[in-house]
Length: 87
Image 1 (cartoon, rainbow, N blue to C red):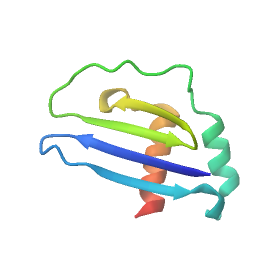
Image 2: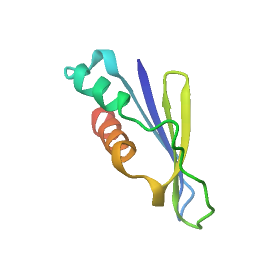
Image 3: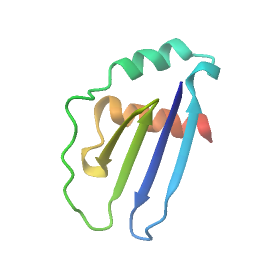
């Protein structure tokens, strides 16, 4: 299963993207546990904030857009984990 995180915006307006294939990770069970804890139904509300990042998280065919100020809980854990695994 592919997980990708795209970060755009910020002061310079740069875009970065990270991706991980969960099935290839040595701790795939932990990844799956984290993915199953994501609150897909409680989508964050997008409010415009200048110079802040916007994150687009894709897990398989699901997608959610999260403003930086609302990136918390399992969403933040997932974003950090994808960034670390991809770097």
